[in-house]
Length: 637
Ligand code: PLP
Image (cartoon, rainbow, N blue to C red; front, side, top):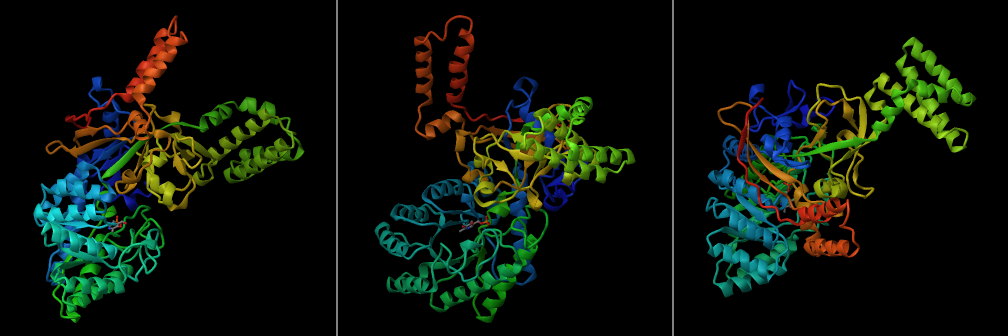
């Protein structure tokens, strides 16, 4: 587990069990090993044919753990509750989930259900997001906030105003000054008294991966001049009592609590000023930014880590707000936050399979030492000298020197090959020998790097790696009791040269991996962890790969270690994606069939094969998959 830093990023949900597999603790607690769910068992049940009791789905697939989601929400709430109690803060916390982070209906429904006892609400950033948020909040707490952010046109604002009429606790947050006139005009027309907020463009910014959102040059929010203008206009319209919320967001993955304190103090001062100016202020919404420790380093200078705990974050927020409001004799506001990443990242694991690697060729070369010798005996002088040095180091059992001479030998031979002085068989023999020596030297970082081909599209499933260089923990979910003997660079199925993972957590350019054929059951499953936020929402359709299927897994109450698959939701298939690009898959199949008939391609011996390829293969793309709702229970073997 040290190789993949599981002890750093895994707790309290992921660990390595005694079988060498990843185990899941859906309730986020240290449990008895027998109560943990084995991720490999889940992968087996998902992939096993339906006739053997499985779901018959192929990787890649997403496994979701709703119990983890519940634990995340409760942890966030209880961390704020404790900070509020311990600091004698005079108001409560009620958070909202920014749906843009992952709009999956079942995730949003779960968040509303799990968060309803503590008035947890939703944040929308566009009209469709507002629609889905309203629909999901029908089953939520009536006090839950529905925060409307993002750029707004008349339609968006009308919908947000009507939502108030439908008894949703909607707040329209101004991102631009123009929205004010629309709200004034439409609220009069619809005869609705709105509740509004302002999004402040803070001067505070952070230097991390997503810090450019904030600061004076940030894209979002209102300057102090604009806020003052809005206050004045609302006052003129007799609507200053409608202004009740101050919002800010200084960017995702805030690296330190010092930056949190800085942002919250600046916002608290603006809040107090708004109170002084006569607004009916009630809520400070501190936005998102609560970070995730993706690389397990807890280092503030890592782009994908943060140096604080959840408790330290909430204490900083509460303490800073309390101290400024007390100094200004302002009643403590309700605290809201829009934590996306910190809410949904953990509960989703993307499982994919590696189905071949470039190491197979090398294994073949390695297997035939005699063959290698036949070619290597004919090397030119300098290469031959290294070859002899290598042998004498091997006789002494000096692995490091062996590796040194093997590297030298390889370099000499590559040069000679380029000059036309070496045959392709000789070069292959040198590669084989070099691989053998590297493995024997067994220094994981010095192992040759092989390309491992994964059945995944980075553009669909890890778009932020491609778009922003975001790193996630990626590792095998089994065979963790065996020392990896290879280093691999994961390459995807798309025909795009960007479709590869060239950097891994810790800045490594390859991942320690196992040999594919050293595995008894033939499958080599890898998991991408902590990827529940943003990746699915932003995935592209490059190469028209469909989205992975999703399986929801819960622990079985009276069977420790057992699990229940509550549903399997099939993702869009290639037919859906062809349609999204305005092709007509059904018409395509028909056209191919006609063409095949005209050309006589469906006669004779190949009749069955051709028909299957056209009518069978393609028709499968276009059949519309129903949601497969399966409720099946499996215990541990
Ligand atoms: N709120 C707003 C306005 C955002 O732009 C974002 C994302 O950047 C969030 C909340 C969620 O941030 P995070 O996922 O870092 O919690």
